[in-house]
Amino acid sequence: MASHAALSTLVARTRHAIAVDVGGTGMKAALVSGTPDGVAPVEQRRRPTRPGGDAVVEDVVALVDELRAVAGPPVEAVGLVVPGIVDEAAGTGVYSANLGWRDHPFRAAVEAATGLPTAFGHDVRAGGLAELRLGSARDLTDAVIMPIGTGIAAALVLGGRVSPAPGEVGHVDVGHGDPCGCGQRGCVEARASSAAIARRYAERANRQVSGAAEVARLLEAGDPDAAVVWEEAVDALARGILLVAALLGPEAVVLGGGLALAGPLLTDPLGERLDELITFQRRPELRSAALGDEAGCLGAALLAIDMLEDR
Image (cartoon, rainbow, N blue to C red; front, side, top):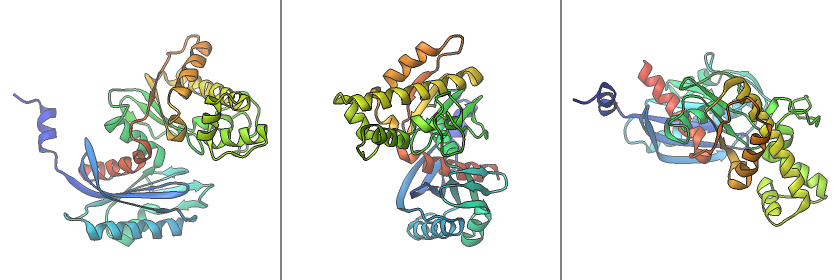
């Protein structure tokens, strides 16, 4: 006889939603169909992100209207995720320094404009949800899913669920003393984010680079300045992971974002540095994220489907 879980999977109703992931520079939107256990994009759109809460809502609504017009089955909900500090329960974007909003009522505004129920969440936590259900964290109960891009944040998976905790691993003090844009000193992000690596190489070598990927190429070519910057970034990242290991003891750290595309060039020295630093802490496995820059949008879709299932 089939198990209850298997029967639940067999009879799960396919839902249809529009997911929107608002990034610091661009928005990704997708018409999706699926269940809580799996979603697939049917049609996708992208556009640049304009600063300001009102502008973001206007563009989200335009994307929803555009995708709704090409949908076959009726769209049942919207899933919207944004960066910065968010209050999921209230449906508000509490604060975004980069995009210039404070206490913006995103969920209410999108629901009013579209007439569709809207699930609202944080972009990194939504990406973590997608990796947990669909990607590299599927077999994990306790994990840290850490995209490394312009900044560094993390989704904390505790007891098989994504925690609402802020997960701001990028802003823990690991002792190097350099200033961070947040106003503190010593932050992981000030040395280990993709933006910091590119900036610090340019300052050290007196040469502009297009990003951390170019620094990685220079490292492989034997550039001594790239080697110093990379080593310091790896040390800061290892110390941040060590702190998380001491507090939470995750089974694995899933590395995503642009920097993770460096693969073994990042994970090999990071693993070695972790081994050097760890004393009593549980040594987390290092994994690469599976979903790339689609994670946030897929996570937004899962939030929308979960909301529909809970009604």
